[in-house]
Length: 41
Image 1 (cartoon, helix red, strand yellow):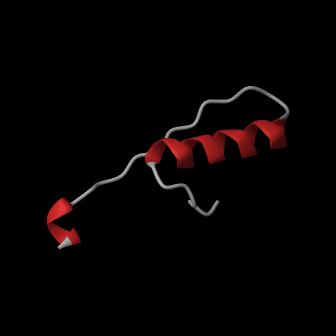
Image 2 (cartoon, one colour; image 1 turned 90 degrees about the vertical axis):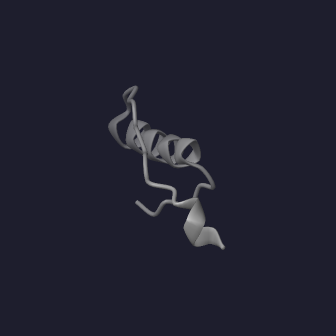
């Protein structure tokens, strides 16, 4: 799944909504990453 959200929370929501729709069940999803602010200069 392409991560098109602006935040980790938004990407987790996209994943959980897609999985819930595909499975027709309630699901929980997690998304995490590493932010290196020094590289944003």
